[in-house]
Amino acid sequence: MAKLPQDIVADILSRLPVKSLLRFKCVSKPWFSLISDSQFAKTQLKQAKSDCSGNIRRVLLTTSPLQSIDYEAFGFGDGSDSNITVQLGYPGEKVPEDDADIIGSCNGLVCIDFDSTNMVLWNPSTRVSRELPRPAPFPEQGTFFDGLGYDTSGDDYKVIRGFISTIGNGNVSRETKVQVFSLKNNSWKEIQYFHARIDIYGLGVLSNGKLHWLGILENGSNKNYAIVSFDLTEERFTEVASLPEHIDQTTSVVNLRNWGDRIVVFNDQRDGSFEAWEMKESSWTRLFSISRDKFPEYEYYPTLIGFTKDGKFLLGSDGRELVFYSTKEDTFRYFEIYDEWPWFEGVIYEESLVSPIVDEASKFK
Image (cartoon, rainbow, N blue to C red; front, side):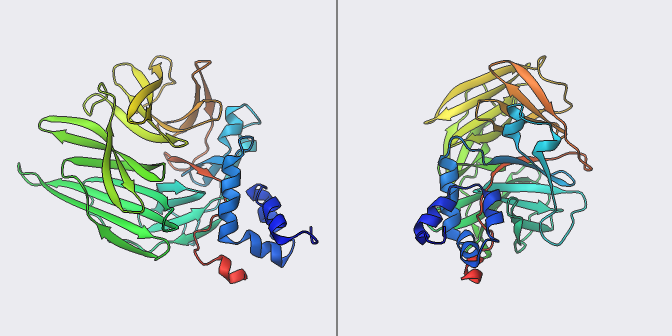
């Protein structure tokens, strides 16, 4: 390898998994510098995403302690629960007391808000983290939305926080705030919200370079769901599409996820079924419908977390356990979760070398 041209070495190394590359940092100073380089991290991630035979996706659970799970291995029945689960130390210097809220996931980076006081951008694969400056606080009453995405034009990771409040006695007076954090600038700014009649909420979902949220559109006395996108380069909101007509605010509990670059809606119809719908060019195709009678017992309602390569659906049940559902076999499989906290959130992330420290690579050159 020492006699090979540097570009050939870089090309060979870029095809290796993250775990191997982290070990290979110790081989030599040139390899350490190469593997720490931000451009190499982009190349390696691109190669990994294009490799259909590999698996770089894991699910991060905000349990105590934090856990990372190779859910593809479990979904295929490879190994026991303990062999595919890794317990992770908390990023940063502070140990949270009882709360961890996921803000978003993008290219191997995960943003988590611990105890509503310590917001961290973290790579669970490399364990490198960065505490973000605290934004101006939002009022406690209202709806909230968050997201993490990558601005390809500006080569910048951005965190989005939003708040929508309804106050007043009889007269509706709406307070809206949207804050955007730029990793490159290490600062927050406030931008304009786009629509007085749409309340968006929850975790933003990345698709085709834009963040997407569920929104509730008010039209007179009627309230219906809509999907709203946020352009990370232009920092502008747009209403994208309405949900299938029978899914409305009064009869359904809905959550939004992505399957590659496709938007998927999972909804509890409250009429005895759970459904998943996929959006293609603003039209909807139903992926499956499950009868409540077939679904394992739950106290509240299940949420969709992600998908396996062979089409199984990974569901979170009451924030206490993971369940795999196979549409082909119409079967469920449970994943036992150890947690000292009463409930958890789950988010899919990709194993990568992407660093939350913008100038980290420069320290090794």
